[in-house]
Image 1 (cartoon, rainbow, N blue to C red):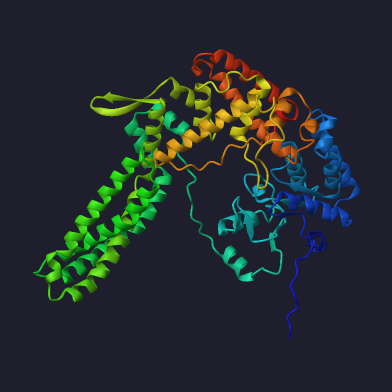
Image 2 (cartoon, rainbow, N blue to C red; image 1 turned 180 degrees about the vertical axis):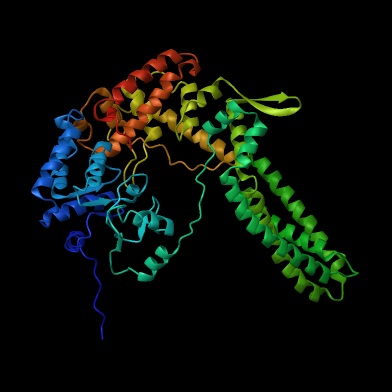
Amino acid sequence: MRKPERYQPRRWAVVDELNFLGMLPAIYFVFSRNGCDEAVDQCLNAGLRLTTDEEALRIRKIVDEMIEGQLTREDLKTLHFPQFRYALEEGFAAHHAGMIALFKQIVERLFEEGLIKCVFATETLALGINMPARSVVVEKLEKYNGTGIVPLTPGEYTQLTGRAGRRGIDTIGNAIVVDHRDFKPETAVALSSKRVYPLHSSFKATFNMAVNLLNSSDYETARDTLDHSFAQWEANESAWDLEACIGKLRKAIAGYEEAMANDAGDMVELLRIRMKLSDLQKNERRRLKHEVFKSNEERSRAFRRLDAQIAQLKEQEANHPAKQSPDFKTLMKWGHRWVRETKELERLEYRYESRTSSVARQFDRICHSLEVLGYLETADENGHIDYRLTKYGQLLRRLYTERDLVLAQAITHGIFDDLNAPELAAVMSSLLYGPRRGEGGEPRRYPGGPRGRVMQAANALRDMDGQIIALCEANGLENYLQPLDFGIVDLMYNWAYGDSLSEVLEHSDMTGGDFVRTAKRIADVLQQIAVAEPYLGEGGAELAAVAHEAYERVNRGIVAYSGVD
C-alpha cells in the first residue's frame, strides 16, 4: 500500500492549532528574515486574530508611548510602521536583525507582558533576551550559516527549545518541530537527548589586540598570557589526541626498521634518498614552475640546480649498498610500509606542531608584521628582545574595528585628508559594511563621479587592503575578512548630507534596520578617530575635526536613538 505523501503545514495553520490547544504564547523560529515577515503576512491574510479588543487597545497605547518623540512621520512610513502596529494589535510580530532596535524592543515588551501571542523569529532571539514562551516551534532542523545550509547542533537546538515554559506560570513547556517531507524524527530525538555540548573558542588575535597587550605588558608576558588562553587550551587538547597517534606510528616505524636490518647496507638511508628524490621530482619542480623570477636567466639557474640535485640523488640510489642484499625484495616489503607510515608521521607531526603554542605563534607573526609597517619597534631589555609601540602603534591601539590595520594605514598615509564630512562617512562605510547574501558590491553611483574624491579614496583603500592582505599571507597570517564592500557608499553619503531615511533607501533593497545598525558602527569609528587627535600625526587636528563633524551628521535622527542591537 502506498504511503500518503507528507506535507509541511502552513505557518498560520500551525499557529491556529496551537491557539486551539491552548499552547500560546509561542515563539516560532524561522531561519530567515524574509520568512519571518512572510509568516506574519500569512497569518493576517488568513484572517487569524489572537487578541481581544481590550488587548489590542492596550497594545496600541504601549506602542504609541514607546514611539512618541523618537521617529518622524516620514521615518515611520519608510519603516512600514502602520503595518507593524496592525500586526501587533492582531497578536503577531516578527523579530530579526533587519528591524530597527526600537521595533524589536516593542515586540519584546509586548511579548513579556503576554499581549502578543506569537513571534516569528530568527535564532538571534534565543541569545540574551528574556522572552520565555509556553511553546517553541522550530520550523526546520537546519539553517543557513552564511556560507551554506548546515544542521542545527544539539547546543543550538537546546538554546532554541529552552525558551519553552514560563517559570511560575507553566508546569511544562512545549517544543514542536514542524513536519515536512525531509523531516526525520530520529534527528530530533538525537538533538534533544544530548546534554553535554563542547565549548569552542571564537578567539582571533588581531592587530589592535596585539598593541594593547604590548602597551600594558612586555612581549614575553603577553605571549605567556596567550599561551594560557582557552583558545590555546582547545588547540592543545586536539594536539593531545594527535600525540597518541604519533606514539603508535613511531613504535610501528621502529619495528619496520628492526625488520629491515641487514649487513649489506642501511635500508632507511636508501628509503630516505628515494623519498627526497620523489619530492624534488614532483613538488619542487611544480613549485619552481609557479615561482616568479626576476629574469629568465635566474629561472634557468634554479632549474639547473634542481636537475643537478636530482641527478646526484639518482646516482646515490642506484649505487646504494643496501640494494646488494640477497633479501632486498623481502626488505622492500617492509620498506613500503616504512615509507607509508613515515609520511603519515610527518603529516601528524606538522599538525601537532601547528597546534601547540599556535596562538602565541600567531601573535609572533602579527608583531613581525606590525614591526615591518612601523607600528612596533624592537628594544633590548637586559638581554631580552621586547617590543615598544611607536606613535603609529599608539594610534592603532585606539581603533576598534575588524579592519583596524587598514584604517590605521589609511589614516597614516593620508587617504582621508582631502575628504569632507559626508565623503568621510561614505568611504568609512566600506570598512564596516557587511552585506548579506546577494547584496553589496558597487553603489549605484559614487558621490562626485568617477574622478571625485570619494572614488579616489576608495581606490586607495582597495590598494591598501591588498597590500595588507599580501603582507599577512607572506607572514603566515590567515585573512578571515571579506573583501572591502562599497555597496552603500552613496547611501551613507546621502544620509550624512542630510537626506531623510526614506530618501536614502528609496532606490535600495537595504532594510531600515540594517542601515541603522551599519550607521551606528560607522558613527562609532568616526568618534574613535575624532578622539584620537593627538595620535593622528601631521594634519591630525583637521582630520579629527572632519571626523567629529561626520559623526554628528551620521548620528542623528533614527540612528541617534539610544537603543542598540
